[in-house]
Image 1: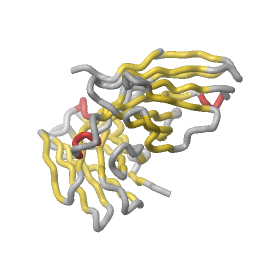
Image 2 (image 1 turned 90 degrees about the vertical axis):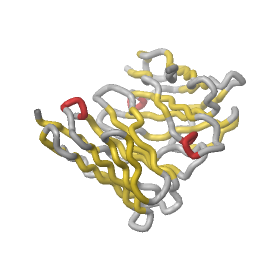
Image 3 (image 1 turned 180 degrees about the vertical axis):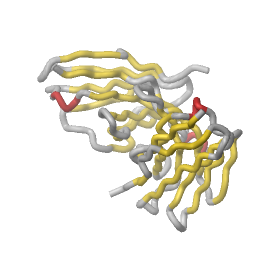
Image 4 (image 1 turned 30 degrees about the vertical axis):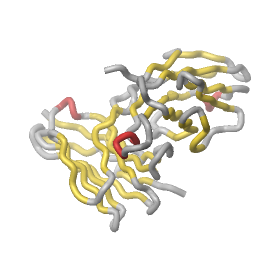
Length: 111
Length: 116
């Protein structure tokens, strides 16, 4: 059974601070990992993808992957109120495999 | 940039009726995925197609079927609808499997299905 675990939150972070979101996964066969942002009633929006151990940076976002620890994280620098949303961590085996999502972390950025 | 198109955006059906949801992937994307998201839940993978062939299968009920057509659009057919089928149904697409970046799945706006 593939599982992705996230703390559901809510995680409250002051505006301008760094938000740190974490995720663990159970399937060692997972090769691809993704972070999605989802606003209430809207579709998931891809924020970051990561496939190799280490860090990957894109603007204010940094994804980190540690396959030995089966751990994925997302850092959001200079948090803005518009970053308030549910962040979904997802893993897949690769190819056309479906994504296994975590339950999501509800992030609140306090102005 | 062109996105995934889903139709209809909203659908109301009665129990035991059938429903067909349509998905048009991002141009040049050849892989389509279907997900179901119930209220307060994370998206659950149903099924995927690559080059018109079923590729991966998740928790899709036997009452549901799907296919991908020659123009790469996909349809999800749902029969004998139950109250528990009320959910948001998302289609996602990804482009070619040659590079890892092509594994990225981009979601459409979803179809909200209400079964009464």
